[in-house]
Image (cartoon, rainbow over all chains, first blue to last red):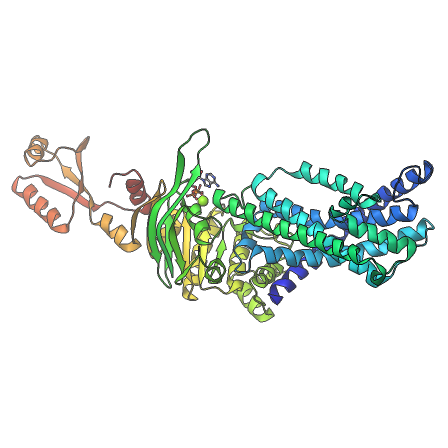
Length: 255
Length: 310
Ligand SMILES: Nc1ncnc2c1ncn2[C@@H]1O[C@H](COP(=O)(O)OP(=O)(O)OP(=O)(O)O)[C@@H](O)[C@H]1O
Ligand SMILES: [Mg+2]
């Protein structure tokens, strides 16, 4: 198991450093897109719409969104890409179940995503002149637990991809749909049961008011954890169902 | 080492309610240390069989055991004894080097690949120089070898190879045959699928010929060849005016006449039968110019079986 984790981690690292050009151009896209939103909102007068109430909220929401899409897309695209290339079957014949391999990859990717997103967040807050309150333990706590729900979504999509193959437009829809529930400050309680929104909501509290994790309301923790658990469990179940289906139809590898 | 019992796999047919019987109730066993070949034309069901064995396809019915462990009931444990090359070069990460591929695939099986072991495998396959080149830049043959290297790095006793010489040029294919033999010498058990007769002829110990999802024959390769070699003879006669008449009287019904030669093709079950014929000919003053064993190669065996003439 440990070896399997190390292997997946090393692979992420190899790809990360070998294709850092992609990473850098990705970075540029991410930044440009951010400044467009940020200055767009500033130009129309900030809080005329309820866009996280403040510009600080926009920064935080945007980065929660990034973490969300990096995570679920990483899983979903990973599966689609490997099914196309033919390596997916090779990973599937490992005696250690694919679910674990995927989990290990998610954790590895998460580490690289954090290394990527957190400095960016500071950079952006510096260039836009908005001071953000970041307590690192709270930041990581929210990122980790929040991202778990993204992984659940990623597993669902990955499973669906094993059987239905053509889901890229569906992935795009979720990508942009999720912008809404990570960036808007959602007042209705049930909204916070959407993946990542509770984490984004608490992250804004942290950024704007400096609320630390031990100062959060008990119920907020409960929601945060249950959302993570629900989406992860649902993700695993859905994935298993589709995985079995693909093994019956014989379509694990063919694309 | 591998036991397949009454394996059935059907797929839905497009535009029809019937189902396609891709693998139609086959049984066979692969013994320790042997090279076992599944030989069959396109669509015979070879890949479906191999994928069922390595747990990528769930069969409709039947039982598969690897070293006594059921793949269907105990997937993980059963799979720890086999590694596979399914589509050769497509089973590799093209953006990583051979060593990185080996380390990764060994790693996800829970095995740490040490450097000297990796170097050893690469040297044996003649890949040492290319170990730090990304797979994408290697030739087709090199990629195929890399896929084998990945299997060896996994350190399993059993290897499944699906169409291992597909897409290789003549030289690489020849080299590859030697390599498969080497695997056996290293104590591996190999189950391969192919429609490359030359490969089967060169390396296989036993052969199962598949057609339309069924195994039409499963035999030791040597026996399969002997079976045929003993039968085919080409007898050339020097005809005079009455030769054909005499042949008819002796009960022959078919021969070719080409100018000054009459040619008989005989399928005999034993050499004794041949001597009997020679005697008859002598008695009837039929002059024999030559008798040749008809060359039997795998292609002929194969065609005769898959045509259902047996
Ligand atoms: N996933 C699938 N869905 C539907 N039909 C399939 C599937 N996989 C294989 N088949 C069909 O099952 C039959 C057997 O296919 P299989 O790939 O096992 O043959 P093969 O002997 O490996 O042939 P080839 O030499 O072309 O690789 C073929 O008719 C094929 O079209
Ligand atoms: Mg095939």
